[in-house]
Image 1 (cartoon, each protein chain N blue to C red):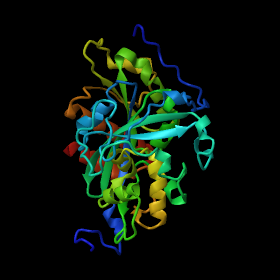
Image 2 (cartoon, one colour; image 1 turned 90 degrees about the vertical axis):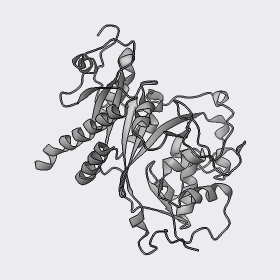
Image 3 (cartoon, rainbow over the protein chains, first blue to last red; image 1 turned 90 degrees about the horizontal axis):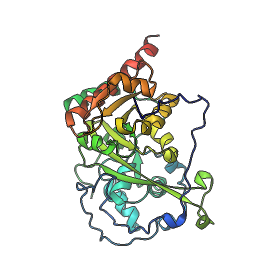
Image 4 (cartoon, chains in turn purple, orange; image 1 turned 45 degrees about the vertical axis):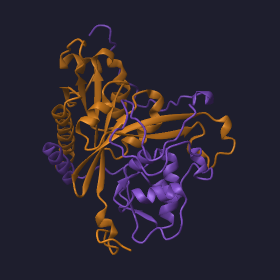
Length: 166
Length: 200
């Protein structure tokens, strides 16, 4: 294979850690558009329905969390694909717009990643907000399955059958 | 005020499906989101993770103006397998500067598809290294790009120094059937790779 180097197997003990440092000035001045999602890296997310919230500049993300970057204990267990659902009878108290928007999405089961994408709020922020909602009992998740546990055989078989049916 | 279709309050968890994920990894422009979009029931969505240099060690943003941040966008799609199982497909950003996302992505993942672009095969080396080291089962899908030299699968296998058990297949990430075939290949591989451990 000319022009292409061969992969060399790495040292098994090789560290898996590299993090780029981006100059703060390179961070674009984001304009947040709520309820629209934002384009994927390969084009606009046309299937995302426009929310009822007006598009326009929104507050800086961590303002929503009062400066917190880490969720409460409950929020810390939230994986990208943890499915969240609004608890029955929630929402009697008035909420700030972000929490209300999350609750509105959670009328049906929805993953953490999808909440983040549909509200166009970074995952870190969504985790903090969801942690609060969990702590207050406004939302709940499926009984915690340790994420380190691999899917069971019957789940794998169901996934295989499901993909074949597509 | 409770609507008729709301879940049973006595057992609210029955209404919440189980979610599993597959990672689609590869270099920039290898066709990850295209492949995800070819089989996803929703137009791929994008979510962002913002990482400050200070990372998870701190609890607030005091002094964060002096910290640097990295933003990484994750594209993903969804396939509802049945009322109890939802499959998410995540496109993993290929650049090694996004390693911090990979650990979380890999945790509990069913398996991974490494999309290889034969014009820039070295862009998927990181992904192969990572999944090997983490013990995440994966297949290598060689995306057919126009204008790319046709390589034999054996050549790709050789260049990536893959173990014998790792399946390699040719795909067209734009084609739904081809994307389906890739996922079927992966899940079959995952099931087979577990078999020795289970019988032993």
